[in-house]
Length: 279
Length: 279
DNA sequence: CCAAAACTCTAAAGCAGGTTTAGAGTTTTT
DNA sequence: AAAAACTCTAAACCTGCTTTAGAGTTTTGG
Image (tube, rainbow over the protein chains, first blue to last red):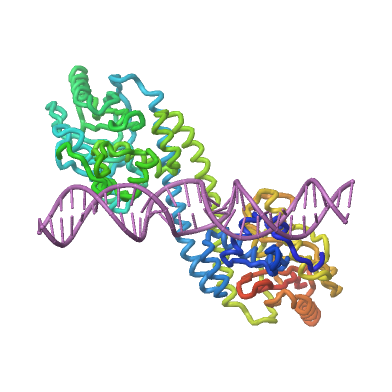
């Protein structure tokens, strides 16, 4: 262990860093070799420089930017490190919160795709128990059944922008749906009432968040937005034929959406549903 | 709400995206305007294209890369989305684990800096209770007290590489320290025994992980690695003068390290300590 | 001592996922 | 018709590196 100089390769190896990274750090002035041969331009390091490199790597591991690290090393101000770290701490926490949401969304999406694969044939009518749900909703300003897809898209945009404006995670913008008043449904009129997205149970409560109660629902499955009127009619007929008493508002729920096949149409898998009561 | 075309600016606004991003997406073929004026090269979008853009933004929110999104949109294969999402899920979990470690390390560092500011003057001797600690340690192969800082740096590197080789988070590489056998200390000889880093209580247990018991320690503070021999001697003298019985191995602990002022020397704040027993 | 192998040099380009800018042309508004 | 607002392309910039090309330097082995 002599007091000898280390070539850039040796320095890189003992510090688990790449040669090019060391060259980069030299260039930006983070850590300069203690000696550079003027002729060959070869860089030579001293083993004592490890201290500084360790510090750099540690700060990097804390998530600091190279620029910040440089600043800290140049100023030698521990207050500065502290303020950067406090900021960084907040950042990391936010990032973790975001990742948690992302994870949940990924899981939901995977489930949704699985559900799609196992889904009943189009037109199937079922009677199922649906657990309670929480939705973020907005009343529709125009009846999109009357005006067509452009208006529907417009209402969707409003919903999305409302989420964004309230600083709510946009990641919920998926699994949208719409509701229609029980009365409209029973009269066979199609009048949109609200448009919504499903949110987690622990979604922060605001004015627009409400709960849809659990219960038995009569449902019909379809895969095309355009078919909704026809299938809603069938759903109503089925309820009437079987004497099911409609107990609440009608819901059109998007179970899976994959606008992947077509450039312009929403490829969907939908479940129309009405809660029913058994006397 | 006519069936009219949207300029790129309008499209951007209603989708909370920037104009340049839309141009980028056009360029890489993610979403192309439904009509481009051949003369002016102006891009025009249809509101129905929102469906695709929503899908893109949703996939992006799930953390998918643009390349992956493009692939999925082009293949129209839901299986592909699923496999990407499953991979991504694992990735996110790893990322969160990393962020958790990072957060802990940031907090430790902030504490350490705070401690530095409140630290007693150099040479102060204290008798304090120190809670139990967990360390990842390696026996030293050479007595660095004898050979000097180059050997110390070398032992440190070995410790670091051992952490890396065992695939353990490098972020612990901070707050290093060394131990010396009680016997060496009592004889006034400086013989390094082990070199270590402090780890969390829930650090995965391996061969190199051990626990240092809690207890009363006699401590002396200093700020320079070179002064250790002298201060260790003072510590020993103090114990003898006051009839404290040394009850275990000597520890040299780095409380704060900030190699920020000097290019080559480790700027440190150290606490030398020996456990003592009161008959 | 010389050739080959191993290493190092600089400069520039590439990655992701955009953003920014410059300079020119086009629509829309007044 | 002029002014304001918008849009176009092409290229540069951002971070934190990595990769490549092509040339030069040290070390190793025989």
